[in-house]
Figure 1: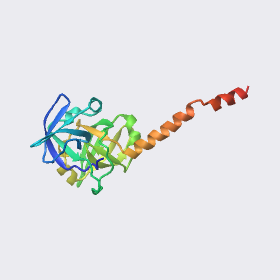
Figure 2: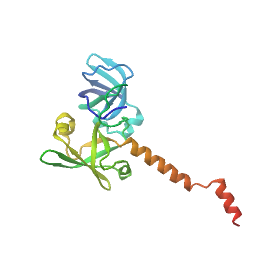
Figure 3: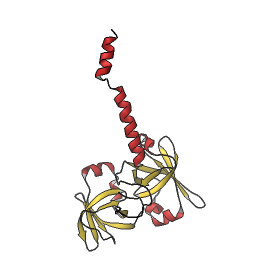
Figure 4: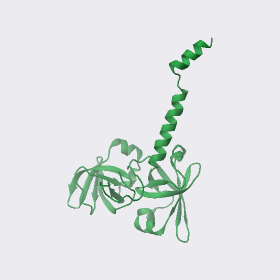
Length: 206
């Protein structure tokens, strides 16, 4: 589990044959879980200047692989007893969004992000969302877009300062919204199915 608070901006040394090699100050251990631009990966090799992780085929089919190059946000998984900040982040990317509008204000910048409309139900106004591993608050939700308001501190200390219109981002929606939606959908589908009791009632009606 993660918090969505970026601990370091590291550099990708290479990414080939599903192996991602990172140059980092973080002292990783074999088997550690580390979020790279919001993607939870497992450390399979430790080097003097960083570590390597393996990217599964399932993960590659969902994320934006261009995010596994250049500079990246990293966050090691929480340890028992750590102070809990940000919000509950699993490191499981739901979809890739695209920045379609950027509006700079006096002391904050609005980012309008477009996603497939099927994910909008998991994005809640004033709720939490993870963008490339960053824990943020959703300000507004529309049909297939949502708005984030980013303060200067966040821009200055993350890669968001380099984002522009057309930039693609890894998105993890709020875990509680996903769970609630799944439960409600499962219940709705269960009601639509025909039980043996339903069949008996129909037979008795004739």
